[in-house]
Image 1 (cartoon, each protein chain N blue to C red):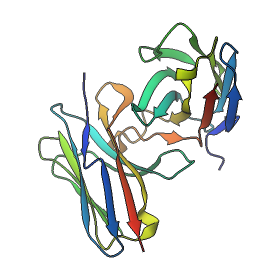
Image 2: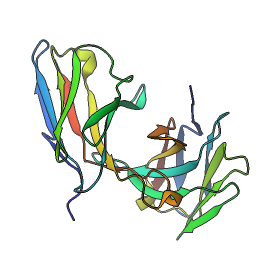
Image 3: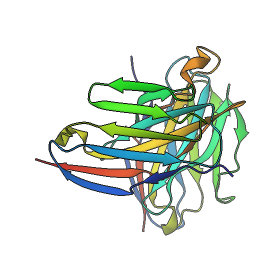
Length: 111
Length: 118
C-alpha cells in the first residue's frame, strides 16, 4: 500500500512568516500534485510536478519534487491570511489514473 | 466552463434510510471518482470509473454502498441503509486521461455533499 505522510499536521502562524510543508513516502510516484482545500469546498489543484528534482513557483509558493520522486515540499514565503486552508499532496501511479492522497496539513495564517 | 456539479450540498437523514448522492462530471472527462472525507481518516477513494465502467471499487466500505454511472454525464453513490458512521463529506471528481501525460493525473473536484446520519 502506498502512503503519503504530510508534516506538520497543523500549522498556525502569523501573517508574513515563512513555512514549509513536507510530503513523504517510501514509494516512487510518477507525478506529485498539491491541492488546497478551503472550508466547505472541494480541493483545488495548485500544481503538478513530474520530474525528479523539479521546482515550480506559483507567486509566493514554491513546490519541489524530490530527486527520487518519493517526496515533495511546499514552501510559502510571507504567508497571508488568504493562504489559510488544508493542503493536500497527491501522488500519481504509472498505469493507474487514481491518486494517492496525503494525510493533509491544516494551515492557519492570522493577521 | 461548468465544473463538477454535486447534489445535494447537504443531506440530513435518519439511520436506516436510503441516501443517493449525485454527480455531473466536467464535460469530456473520461474518469470519475467518488471520495469520502472525514477528520479521522482524511480523503479516501471509494470507487472510480473510466468511460462509465467501474475500474476499482476496493475502497467501498461495505455492501451498503453502491455506485453507478449510467452515462458520461451522470453518476450516483447510494447508501442503503445509512448508518451514523457514514456521516462525512462526499466528493466527486473527474479527470481527463491520455492527453498531455506530462501534466500527470489532475483531478477536478466538486463542492461536495455533507451527509449527516442521525
